[in-house]
Length: 363
Image 1 (tube, rainbow, N blue to C red):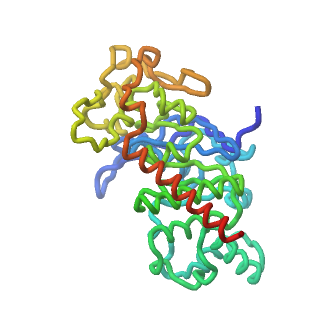
Image 2: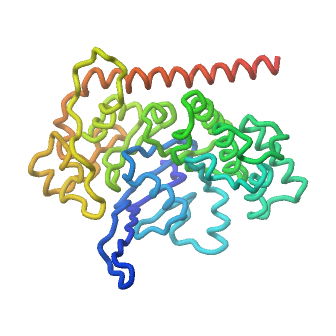
Image 3: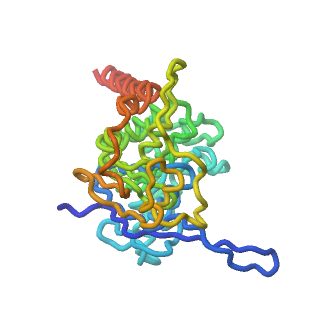
């Protein structure tokens, strides 16, 4: 078996909670990420999905060492990232980059686009002024912008263009892994299609790997090779995207799929979904953390924590009753949703338009 580009083992991050303004005292810990393990191969896209607050973005920042882990290890290109310090860690950061969710807040409004794209090259001591200027122009071309855009400021661009600038900045130091932290959630649907297709084109051209964080399952279905579903800081299901969408083996994954809106005023059938609120990560329930909301929970779920177990080829789920789950509701299995299907068609149409434009320009 080929060694993975990224391997995460038992990654954990607990945040201490203190109370009191003058005499502060420990009031507990927030278990933001609790024993997460996964691997990511070269050229692959792994999506992390789940409700807000489940630990997706914290996991990404732990992988990048933007946050220090409480426990666990992160292996990248055969090196233990969690044990690295100083110059070795600084040098490794060239291979690990991130595209942030907010394309405006992540760009310095006082810097021109050229300065923004040149900054990582200066930080890592890459090239002289002339070669850096050439690199900036090339980066803008790679993401569909013109060289003269380097003289403009972030506020002069649309949201989609700003996200292209964020992608160009991530590409500047030629990484092999890019963390995409909900890169299209703040964009209009038509612009989402353009940015998603750009990411896929860059992946094919440059051999990139993506750790793709999202809550929009239509985007995930279009982007991901594999999907990991997180709940309360833990991965509850992971597997190939096609298998997970067609035959989810954890009740929480089914809940996410069933909760996608379906714009049908005549639809009366509603599949059973989770009820109640997500428990506090300061005090997660004993046993399976999903049992307080799961319509299929039994006594064993309330006392014994399930572990990830194989339910198919490369497909694992942490559920005591995964083998007993009934077939997925036909309406849910047919597609993520009619709206999601239309968006997938839009992504494909945008890609076809871009290819047609490229062919006509070169002929």
